[in-house]
Image (tube, rainbow over all chains, first blue to last red; front, side, top):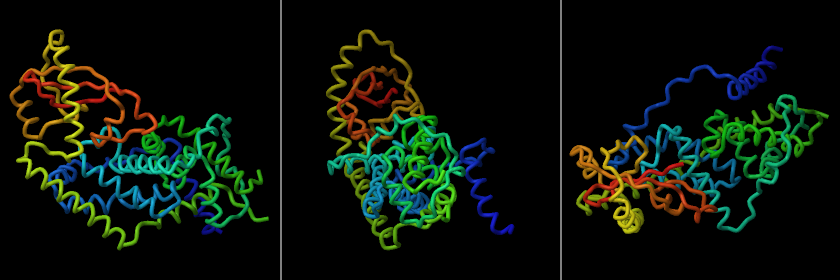
Length: 205
Length: 158
């Protein structure tokens, strides 16, 4: 009985940790020595940074684009931009991972617009938000494919908020920094995204 | 009918996503490409005699910037008070080589801070992310100019 309940409890704790009051976080790793070595052309510093940051950037791009090739391209572009201008990263404005994700995001948006595909746009942002907590939204049992199809139907803004917070489990402040919006805006997008997602997945609430 | 909470479903999705990453072959190919870029950049610095530490597209951008700013500098020279060089941590992006930047700071020479505006797309030339949809908009900037007329650094103001 206890073993069946434990995963749900852990999941709940994870959500509360991200959305509620947080305990003090350990100090972020100081990237400046590595970046300094990178600026001096040190290949080992590059390899180390790549190993540490590439996975999260790739997953963020993959979840947004839904396409492995596009995700790989965006990830490479992010590191390429960092190499071209290491001074562009300002640790006072966020983590290196968030900075790289921001460049990947910019690249994806540029590619999207270049293909002249209409961006699933922001009209839904005018809709009233739904305050329902995700643990209160019941959906029909679905496989993962159905979940990702439903995520792909969200507007860009809502998809991004959902990916950053619910699927990548980033903190609200970091997610807002990547998306370039205030924390309040990001929360609103997240609420709308969850409500729409529940609708797509056959909400029973 | 079987139901989940959305939270459970998303948690499973997060776990599945956490397993995804490029294949080892893809990682190796990307890292090779980036290493080549890093090496090429180092070679450009060496060829340039260490005077300019940036890729060529950046140089083209700063060249155009210099032309624009020379005029601004001349106009504002008479009314601006000289100030001490500002440390790079204040948000200025150096537009000169690290050696020149260090020298300007070490000598404690007077510099002028010149407020200006430039197209938002100029951010890309400096390697900064920008929104292409707003490329035509202007962004406010402050340029640090040495009294010799050399543009030392630029800072973008929100």
